[in-house]
Amino acid sequence: MTQRTGSRLDVEARKISEKILASDSVIVASHIDADGISAAAVASSALDRAGIEHEVIFLKKLDEESIADLDRKAEESVVWLTDLGSGYASGFSSPNVIITDHHEMETPPQGGDEPVQTTLASYSERAHLNPAFFGHAGAKEISGAGLAYYVAIEMDKENEMLVDLTVIGAIGDMQDQESRRLIGLNARLVDAGVKLGIVRRTPDLRFFGTETRTLQRLLEYANDPLLPGLTGDSYACDEFYRMLKINTEGPEGPRHWSDLSEPEKQRVLTSLSRRILENGGTEREVERLTGEVYTFPKERKGSPTREAREFATLLNSCGRNDMAELGMRICKGDRGRPLERALELLREHRGNISNALFFIREIGISQHESIQHFHCADQVKETIVGSVVGILLGSGEADRSKPLVGFALAKEQSGEFKIKVSARAAYELVGRGLNLSSAIKGAAQAVGGIGGGHNVAAGATIPLGTEDEFLRLLDEAVHGQLRSLKA
Image 1 (cartoon, rainbow, N blue to C red):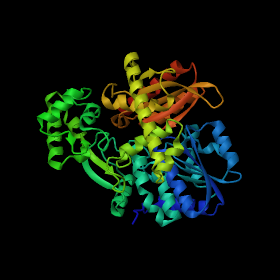
Image 2 (cartoon, rainbow, N blue to C red):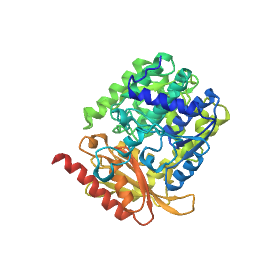
Image 3 (tube, rainbow, N blue to C red):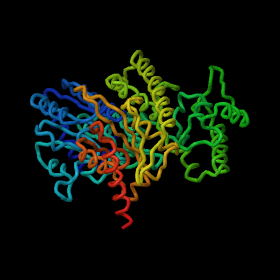
Image 4 (cartoon, helix red, strand yellow):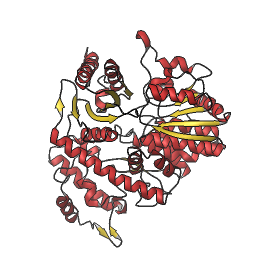
């Protein structure tokens, strides 16, 4: 029932699955975000079903130290990197390293036309699955969890029941942001999930919290798009529902969006659309009110595990608080106390983000010719800077015509302090030639750091004190990318 691609991707996934199934033990290494946790859960579940002994480790990033450590581990076990590795594949020497990753690959050496990994992928002893090999965009068509899934279903058809994790991974990486729905290979996986009864796809309001936030808070915290006169004003939100004659309280307590009838939802959407347009908003902003929403019928109604965006946020709260393993347990079906603990972390996570936004609004965003940035120093956890950058850009509080860059102080395992860099851009800039991954990687390397990611979202770690030079180089690189297309 699972919809395979019918292409070379399936063939390569099968080769990787055979290598995994022939191994005695596997070490899964994955990223700490929602996609990385989902991908690790897919891999771990598939290995469980195959009866293969394995260990799962989570990494904030790949650097020389972690690459060397994984290479050493690969002397005794197969090492399976999920949602990590494509940007640094040539750093691994062991043929026992497997990579299933959707991030941008290494830049061509000495002006060559092909990415470094296209040569590695042709080696029979090197297993590397990246969507770019098959003509798919890793930033929006397939996630790390999706790639791990394609390997998993080649290991055993029964692993198709893990398809919900691919949706969570893709939504966690905001791959629906541009189209307001999942597209490409992600859409095929959604189709498979719907046919299996695991995923429900519904045209609906796209705001975060349709399962868990009260109706008032749903609008009060809305930021994509902003709601004139409602966003940030709880009293106005109460009045809004009263005027529409929609009860915000039910027999069992506060109502949520998922509790509303279809006529009630339509009254709200019609009124919100009119409010946006009457206050100078655009048709595009009205369109962004709705899109495809993905829910999981097997999950309890009102739980953050019921809707993909909320599930992904729950996983992010685990990963960003050094408890990615807890998130993986929940992905694998563990509820009870693990879910309670994750909900506690989610509340802390939301508080941290709220405090971070307040701090950044106080210090302001600095403007450069082609980019903009803020520096949190040690006032914001480096693990949430990317989330904050995305919120500010999506809410319109930052200039969408420029990439937004956030800095925060980060302490390495060695005890050395460095600067964590997180950057996001609007998708429309990609059409003008922007590739944040290559721009950030180049600027980071020039100052002695490392970086990479996607064309619209990338990150880096750079030495303390190099921020000004990094910004100068990044500004030049972004300016050159955007100008080159015009030329």
